[in-house]
Length: 305
Image (cartoon, rainbow, N blue to C red; front, side, top):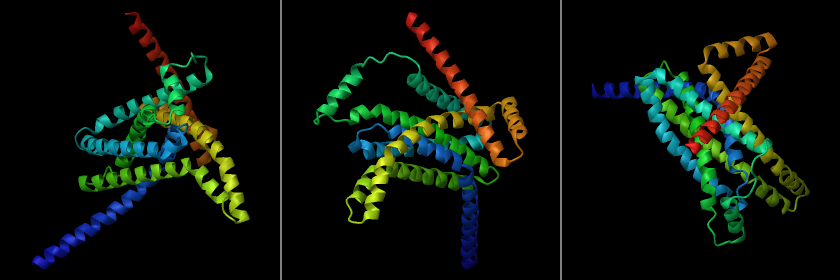
């Protein structure tokens, strides 16, 4: 009797693991697009840091991302179990935040603003000249910004994963969501660490005796700065694409309108996807600009009081 109970338990465990494997693959496919945006955004956040501080910054953001997951995974499972109606509004707040940050980046880059160096810029310049100064203090804001962005994208990934396993029981949901959260975190920040150290790989290859290795190393060294600039642009665009998509999915008429326009544009699936993504990004830009304007006016009114 005890033996049959043991084998029954073993069979149940095997069934759960098989179901989890299948659901994890489905969830991974659905979150792949957000994963690409997450990679671009985090590589962008790390760009501009001193060379000898790139990996420590990636490590700090990685730890922040793990803390985000420790908050988001239990919260998402609890919300899914007791208040599933709250998932969409919370995601829309996150999407609005992404659009706001993206719009701020564009405004500071392309519109005139006060460029007089403030105390922080002066202190940074002095710190760069003084090797005794700990540069970690100057990187905290960058790390905080990266962790905030990671929080929004992690919430999106977890929400999509929950949607993929909505019909499963709580145990399977918990295993799949936790697996996806950990795998995405390790994968994203492992790739980011590799990207920011591409120049070191190029220099290493250039020191080798093989002509092919030296040529490849030279190509990597020359391409690395352009890759980082490209990731910076892609990262900002991703803020609008992901944020805009979250917002439009929460606003029924807008979402259906974008679907209708994308279907009118072409009968080809990939063209429809491109058109839909572009329209979501345009909506994200408009929403972000509106939020920047409203918050700027609010700040001015508050200062006058």
